[in-house]
Image (cartoon, rainbow, N blue to C red; front, side, top):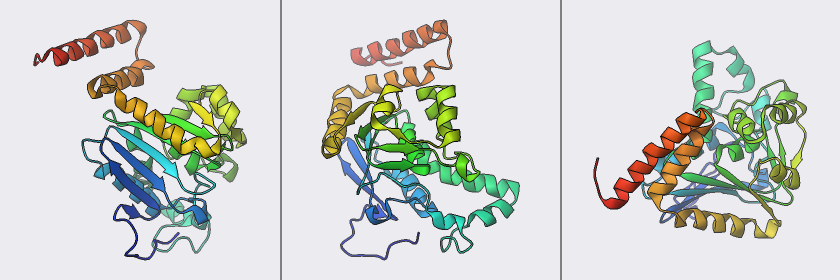
Length: 268
């Protein structure tokens, strides 16, 4: 997928199929190549990574959404061809690279998928239609997911002889458990809206016409909580699976002490 031609009507926050809009404490990141079903390319990944770096410190909640009938149809299939995407390595070139170069390249791709869980932010993905492969993993990168009733998640990498490598395996396993994550990835089957809510993959499913409103309502509810309390709570929950019960109790006490002193205006 080549970069779009420069257009004077294009918003300054739009680049390579990604638009970033800031509204006070809320940032909205939109995949905006609906005619291509928001197929992903390295250029789009660089734009997504840049959006994360460009967020002002005032932003507390990030909403990820997509234009068109599909959230993202996954990787641009041109990456699989000998011609590839102009200016980008195709899969054959990636395979022939030295180990460090290949590792560095994949790590650079992963940057687009990892910043959404930063400790100072809460991210919400609004997902409609197909969210396939890289699209599924991008939705998994967010803290929370609201889905339309027509959503279809699928992890197709394994059926193509690959593995999911865009930071999606950890959140998927955390959300649905090892056995179901393994089954979803290896079979490559579709997971619809009702099942995604039932297994904990999505927080809420709504009619497609209500998706944007429902996601924005959730963002507003998240913003209603005091920032310091939200950050501390997110940190407690993110670390809970790696702590014992007693360690988690201790972490709660330490976090609460910080909150009490902050609210009382008592410094460290």
